[in-house]
View 1 (cartoon, helix red, strand yellow):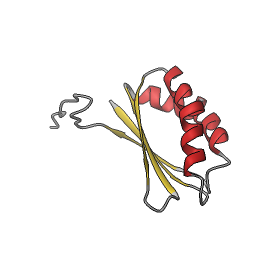
View 2 (view 1 turned 45 degrees about the vertical axis):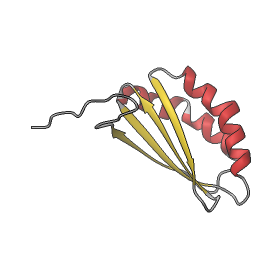
View 3 (view 1 turned 90 degrees about the horizontal axis):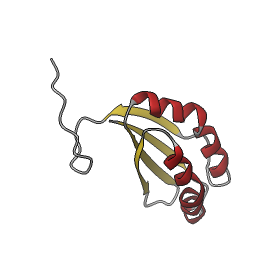
View 4 (view 1 turned 30 degrees about the vertical axis):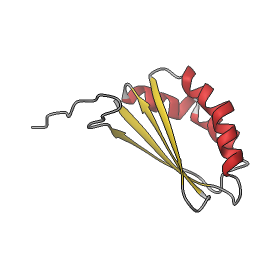
Length: 106
């Protein structure tokens, strides 16, 4: 399992707009994406930062989403975002929620 972590800065007073757009436009796009598993979004106390974590079955599917659908996501959220989000992909090493076992490393 892989996770895409997206750190975004929001324009002041745009948390509600971001959340509404995310719920109505972005989540349906994610659900249509091959290999998508789950999404968790966090709002910072300042109201100007968001962190989104999406979970994917395979790295290839996360990368495919990044190239094909993510530009549409950025366009949908453009009125709420300040600057460009930072995106990183990680392999999930364990999770109690997703029941991911720890991988043995040699």
